[in-house]
Length: 373
Figure 1 (cartoon, rainbow, N blue to C red):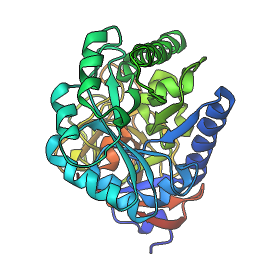
Figure 2: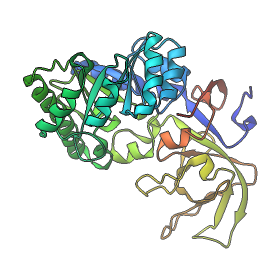
Figure 3: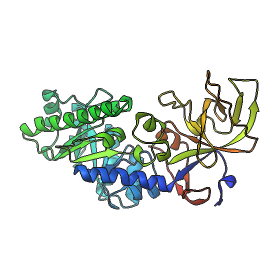
Figure 4: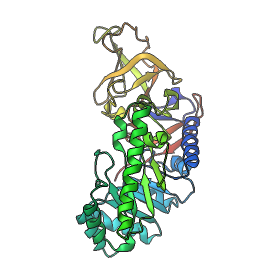
């Protein structure tokens, strides 16, 4: 294994372990103060080496977004998982296989069709009903009592474990006040849906909410039993722009190498080309403030106003934004830069490992990462 950043092949994914551990402790402490269980979402890390640091215990609880994640983490002994994506009937056989191995894997759904598929699959599979807290994606609106009860009625009564919601709209809630409002909306939606189900005779013991922004800004979680979050382990530029974290909390970056210059192109100072294009960074531009990522020096300190302005498959174009009078750094071919990602879930998905740093430029470990569904 290479010992120093200068020896690593590029592009590659770096992980600052001290930042990771600080991020994990921050949310763990916050949830303890609010009196709710943390069910970490492992979709962002997709790595047992990271997951074992995130999980409250070696067996869970955990959240996953793919059955590949559930199967992988089950091999490491995780036994309490929620598959937090609406269930497709064709996937129930894999869910059942994991449950026969002793994995308490619950699924989520929001329709009579899904509920009927679970009820008729021949296996006892626990269910969380998905609630729409903010119109962001899937789920049943909490005030739609008849729809909630129609779905619940199709399930075996013992199968309905509770309700689950995700305040995805919080990713567009800028500022403390807006984020606090999103967190309260999420809590209130889940608690109200659970109340209606309980009034109809369903036990509904689990009330599950969560997103990284709302987990960090919620002031009151009365009625909630667990919180799910995933991006918090690494954070990214989107979370920094929302005010959920600071730049020096971002634990992952992409190491890239300068491969050329085009002095006559682009704004002041021209272009600097690297070997990290959209295959290394993803196409995600976040809120549009940092192009495809923020450029830092090899030690991880951001350059002022230098961004990945454009990408092609294997080329990244570093430039100063139009209108700026800032002169870009002059780096020679072969120089290394680090790029902070807009959305770490998308960026990390491009890699099969993390090169782990301990606060310096020396690589202390390689942690494998998997992908797939």
